[in-house]
Image (tube, rainbow over all chains, first blue to last red; front, side):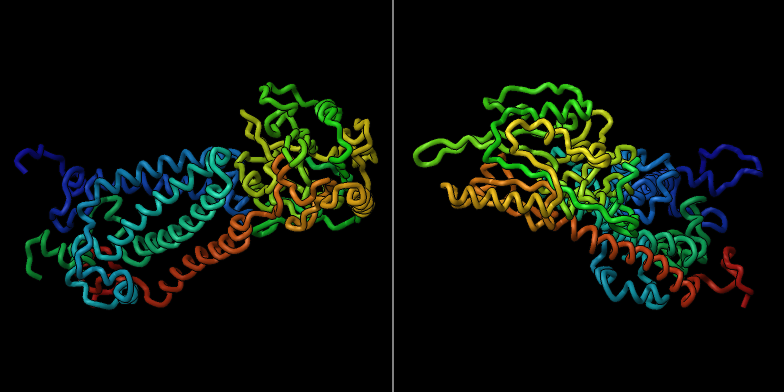
Length: 230
Length: 298
């Protein structure tokens, strides 16, 4: 703190600290995501929605009403692959930046299965949950895989006549199935990050959470950050 | 803008998930283009007629060692005579076949197309493109078993034989048929052209071509264009005509199974999340320490 400049009383201490530090306590709050993390996340989110909104009207005529959002279906067809490139790059940056924090511990393997359902029922013992729970870590890796699958199949769909017929058919199916599975996980990602768990959305905008939020959702992280035993 | 005095039986991407939007008001006699490869002399009058009627510009090509004008169809070249030499015992066969859109009864291009109304099928069997709706995605090329759809280099729009829908709609025969000097091309109802074809096939079989057949593949529920092949057991000799063309199974599976299931899955996830919230509520701290909570203090 020795290098901290003097501040007006009006400045928000936590937000300023959160510009470059995380996993530290500031007043009544704990900084969970520093600025660069939040920027990376929102780049991925915004490019995801750009792909989603330009891709859905192409995907099914039931969403043809969305095509005028971008000026018509031809614009969607032109824009969607470029949005896809942006999404792939943003996802790659996120994969590299957060990889070290997402290593799945052996005792977290059961999150692919019964532990996930227990968690969704707001039951189970969360005492060992660190900064990210097993479900979040698995979501991180499935999202990275999904982004890769969408990119590879997307390139074939972008330049279809340069690829043989069978490759084109497989690409259509891969792009579709990957998108569907990804979209289902994203629905729950957004739900859990907003309505289901109050205080979470602020962690990705303001960058901070309350002590009580940390104690409830990520007890082991709370102990590590605050140095408290309970 | 589709040709207004023709009835539409199917339009791409115009149902909830697939094709639809039949106008269902009038019945039209089906049309058919009859091609007899056994009497074609490869004069290319039909190629010229198609270029002239449709105001298609001259396309640069290259000499590949045959009389064939282009290696393949082109967005500005919708009708191509294919020249294929095939050696048999005792000689050489020089096979010529008029290649263009087959106007399938079950058009793979229309089924694959994701742009509403970009490809339409008229009640008389003609399959046509509305370029204003076309988004140039190329799915139609993946759906077509005959490798017909081609795309303009800069606008990306798909273009192909229209079966001279603008002529047919006012009672004229297609330009290619009008131009043919040998009478190997005919135009009429599907029933009449099939009868003509079967008659010709019988003649060929009685005169040294025991495997002559009429090419009208059932895999696409039949085609508007019916072709007499002297060597009907080897359609692939005639410029790669597929033996058993059908709408690719991957495209059918995608459109009719994966997409509807996926739609249900995603909507289901949203409904599920809402249902979860109704049933479980929020996961939050009850007590004084949580400043986010607006529950009453215990």
